[in-house]
Amino acid sequence: MTRKIIIIGAHAAGLDAASAARKTDRSAEITLITKEKKTAYSRCGLPFVLGGHIATFDDLTVFPERFYKMMKLNLLTETTATNIDAKAKTVEIQDKNGNKETLSYDNLVITTGADPFVPPIKGRDKKGIFVVRTIEDGEKINKALETAESAVIIGAGLIGLEVAVACLERGLKTTVVEFLPYVLPVLLDKAMADRVQKMLEEKGMKIIVGKGAEEILGTDKVTGVLVAGETIPADVVVVATGVRANVELAKNAGVELGETKGIKTNLRMETNIKGIYTAGDCAETINLVTRRPTMSQLGTTAVKQAKVAGINAAGGYSTFSGALGSWITRLFDTEIGGTGLTEFMAGRAGIETVSGTIVSKTRADYFPGAFPIRIKLIAEKETTKIIGAQIIGGEEVTQRINALSFAIQNEMTVKELAKAETCYAPPVCETWEPMVLAAEMVLRKLR
Ligand SMILES: Cc1cc2nc3c(=O)[nH]c(=O)nc-3n(C[C@H](O)[C@H](O)[C@H](O)COP(=O)(O)OP(=O)(O)OC[C@H]3O[C@@H](n4cnc5c(N)ncnc54)[C@H](O)[C@@H]3O)c2cc1C
Image 1: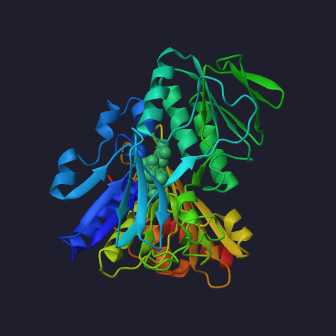
Image 2: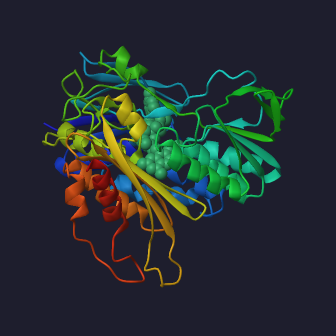
């Protein structure tokens, strides 16, 4: 009998789940349901369209229409899944015209993702205040930036800073307001974050840390933001204060949530209800260092979880063991990335650490165009295993973060990294690879 698979959500996780399910079961009937009009575009590229690095929002499309035909996927756009009946194995849907239908499934994959969270700041309903999640959000911000002279970005996480850079590149007077004491507070330790802040300030960005946005000012339309008694003029306000997992639909169906309030799964991305799988920003995962539940909410984790969920929903066997939350960005010309735990996060998890930071060059000293690179390496004191890394530097940060992520996943010690063989040629690297120098620095402290 033909296997019926329904996937709720058709974005990074939904599409990868569909693709994996199709490769596992060539004859399954696979239906994707999404509220959105456009599917299969990169949310991650939105700030770079705003900054003018990518010509149009349409360029962000990852899968063209022919993909769905080729993969034999039924795609229902502008359609909302309104209820899951886990006993009857049905999903109720409603299209944009209000038409309702009930679809039956053998296996279900919930990839409902996350929505931006806007804190209850006074005045948050005025015109000119935006979030960044969908292509429509991007288009609205883009239009507003055409006539705006100033912008305030609330939140100095990855998305907030990427959008702030875009605003500055568009010539706007740009201010970032961060409630926590430093930028990228979940991703970097303070000393590293301060470097990023200094670099951004040198480019002309105003950054206020350790203070919250108290009120968004203006009558009908935003005119400014009140921060610690100071009024910062703003024609545009972008709120980038994080996301909340969309779990209501799953919860109402009896799907269990974890301690992070994301959907809890086993290693096969199956929920507590047999035949219901999940993946992406709505799903919990295990942090590979602490072994505790966490919400990764990165595209990389979403597609990996989704592949596993899709294979299993189609009758195959696959597992996902967890994530480190490895990340990377580029702000102006500076690449910044990290993997594993920050020292602050390790401390909160009760892990005693030793860390070392080095500054080196990305090419031989005498080779033109070398960039400075700063690496912070964090090890667990007792085992000397590497548990985290942060890098700020001009080039090749991605592959160094990847290498350090592999090192953490394979439980490498700092001594092993300090002795590791690396390659060298003047135009691309130093004889002493900066990651190895960072490991030596930690070793010295351990002695
Ligand atoms: C501006 C920006 C930049 C980013 N940059 C990066 C980056 O550089 N690197 C990285 O790894 N990650 C990045 N991310 C995060 C990444 O985009 C997300 O992790 C990824 O989109 C998660 O995919 P998902 O499919 O789980 O969820 P989502 O992308 O949230 O998709 C879920 C979909 O389900 C739909 N849906 C929800 N409920 C229902 C329902 N009841 N019925 C029908 N449809 C429903 C939603 O409308 C949505 O289309 C970025 C995100 C943003 C916003």
